[in-house]
Length: 78
Image 1 (tube, rainbow, N blue to C red):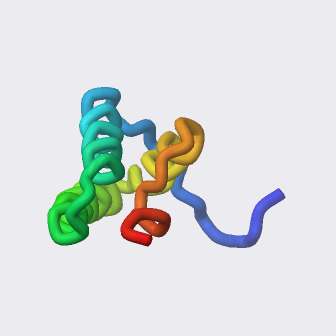
Image 2: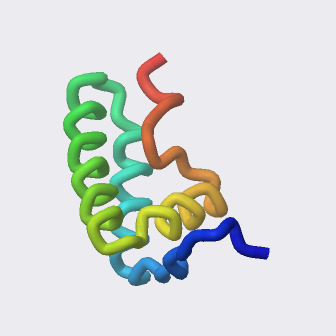
């Protein structure tokens, strides 16, 4: 069933790219200093922007959710 508009197919994120993002997320979650965690989150945000430019942001988000990682950093620093 279509919603009346064209929907771009979901593109798969390269394995090395998603692995690198997961490593950054693990590093961010293990850091105790909030400023360092914020700096790591800015790097993750740049990776998200790159994925968005290449129409892979939904795939990257679903990969991280499937592996139980918080891509946007909502739960750290509390």
